[in-house]
Length: 123
Image (tube, rainbow, N blue to C red; front, side):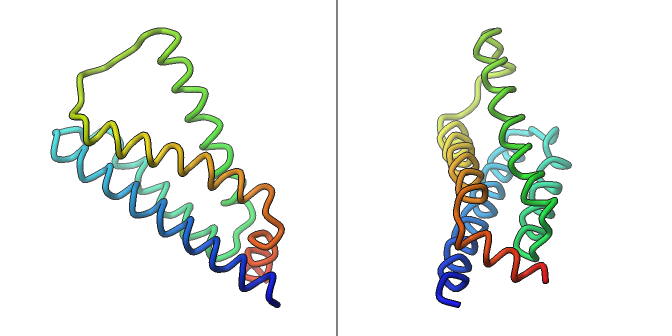
């Protein structure tokens, strides 16, 4: 039971932090007139809620989204693609959200306490 409680704290912290950063980045994007990622943000929020509810497929979707985002970032760097200059605060928060996404994916895959909690949530 202690393992599950530890997993709950870790999962809630990661999910809450991800939601907070994703919403902050979306607000900053909207302030710049960038509306192209609204659907992606909505999917992200639903995915995080489903993970908390213990939906195993949502956890793996999150991990796949992370791998996809890494691949897209590498492709953008390789092609030296920059769509438009963005304010520094948007870059900082988007980078923080991306790094947190990677860390969260690693924890979701390898943390036994988080996986025990998510299993309990789903059953």
